[in-house]
Image (cartoon, rainbow, N blue to C red; front, side):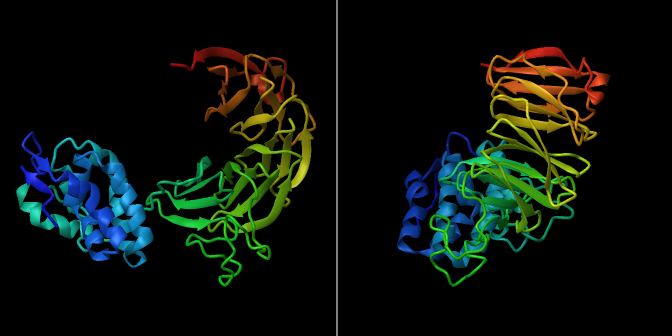
Length: 399
């Protein structure tokens, strides 16, 4: 292949740098289409090629090349994912490096046996080097999802910050390593490699056309909301298929409990003490489930006149705050027969989000009316007295 740099030096940048843009734009794509695995992998794992792509404003195209190469050359998948992970971890720095040599400096910090490190060795005497005293010597692949045809509607981080659960329009939940981005598990009848968990021999068991004999099916509608248990051992998912499902927090194995609703599940909250789950529904009811007794239904909380769009629980697990399309906020005493003491109508449009502060003294509510309202929590809120919340401030949330 022709040289990438026609004039100047990538390490110096400046006006004198000229790149072979035709090669940068088409060479790897042509190698992938022609099945030239070695040539394509050599480029995609080279820091010179990576730095040149970003200098030429072709970073998005580079990520697309990784995706296509991983699909086309499974034998080189690990090497490509490690290089892809390098790009993903350092994306902001690669897009706008404060000095031209920064991409090469970052490559020098990669494990000594990695392709990225080997590609920078010929350049290491050409720039000021800063070496880590205890550089990690194990590469961690990072899977970047690009060109995904499905929307992500829900994403949540585990309590210990180690895992991310995400779900959306394709009806599937995926579990990722929060540090590396590597996929750990997939819900339903498919594992992270796309193979059917129930029967590897069933070629027709796919996400588009599920195997009719597959015993593990997952959701049949959009995954709208996700929530971790306080100890991180379980994940809850609410769907437009009217179900609330419980999953193992390590490998997304579906547990026995499927909590059916008469309408779409719109929001979920799990109390900090781990004892109670609250779910909102398009039928306008908030439901309370006993997490200590196989998620048995404790009671249905009627009060909203339209769909419940959001719910949040106080830090002491005693009070829930819900928001609805009926433009109201309502307070509920958890695990009590006591009804909401007060319905608050301060928003001019549906309430779309609510949250408690960590100390329980403040709650906020966001609305389609383009405002965020900040509420002070009075002492009587814990017994649901007459002066539960007092409006402290309204913030306009618009351009």
